[in-house]
Amino acid sequence: MLELSLLLCLVALGITLLNVFSIITPQSGGQINQKISVLVPLRNEEENAVAIVETLAAQENLSDVEFLILNDNSSDKTYDLVKTTAGNDSRFKLIQGSPLPDGWLGKPWALDQLSHVASGEVLVCIDADVRLSKTAIASVVDSMQEHCLDFFSAYPSQVARTFGERMIQPLLQWSWLSSVPLAIAKRSSNPSFAVANGQFFAVTKSALDQSGGYSSIKLEVLDDMQLARVLLRNKFKGTVGNGAQIAQCHMYSSWSELRNGYAKSLWKGFGGVFGSIIAIALLALTGIIPILSAALGSPYGWLAFEAVLISRVISAKITRANLFDSLLHPISSVLLIYLIIYSWLMRGRIQWKGRTV
Image 1 (tube, rainbow, N blue to C red):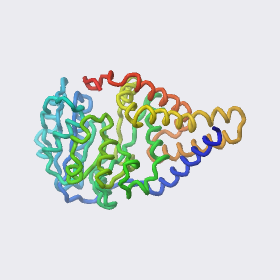
Image 2: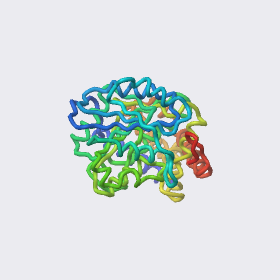
Image 3: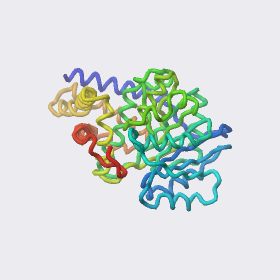
Image 4: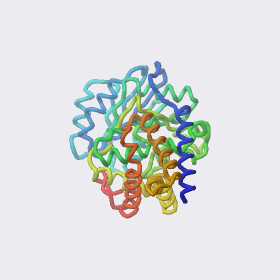
């Protein structure tokens, strides 16, 4: 088992090193002349409503852009705050969402409504808690054009303040940086290479429509990953990139909020019970066994531990995460294993934005 652990840690390090040279990193985009539609679903987001409008209003290098914001039946001040902040800016259109129909989850339904109103050639989906540099959207569209992509997810830097956030958020970015060869992924239409983050996701409208639109993922908790898989199955190309230089996102502000956030989706993230067991085994082999073996004096254990730590440090450097937190990789692995198990125990019982998921 220790030999397998060492092998997996070395493979993770190797893939991470390769991805350093192949990952797409949008920085500053030139002038974009395509029509761009920015889709923002909001439900009870009064804490983010003003900031998301402000970060969109500041976008530059977009010749023709519309900001479509859907108020998804919010029960707080979201609608009024958006309306007041957007003011007379003609680029903004505020839409009142229709009630959630049977057979849909909230976010896919909100995005489906927005996509039918959108008139852009490229749709850029952004979550309420994302903050952008002034040329973020232009640089993402520029990267899509440069690499001939039909969709592109610029993974934002994850703001992590509490201990729980610091242990979990960077681990998820490391998971795909150390396991998915991005040089192959951006050229392949194989769904097994799908990686995406719905916080900042751009897709051509033609590719989305030809793949069935958001109705193709209407019951998917992990709507971003499933949409990427649907697009790839339909022979469109796209991948994830490093959006740390152009975007940041603060998802959770407490452990209970983080736990519920992951509980609603982790059970679906690995394709079922068997996939979750495999994920737990991999986390143990790359996060727990190396340090336990090293503590018992095994040179293989130390080598495995060093390999995985180097890959974590590289990932943290690329994604602007805390370098010190990388050293606590075993703790991160234990906590993520706990969250996977908790997610299965709580599936279908978690309340999120006032809805059960």
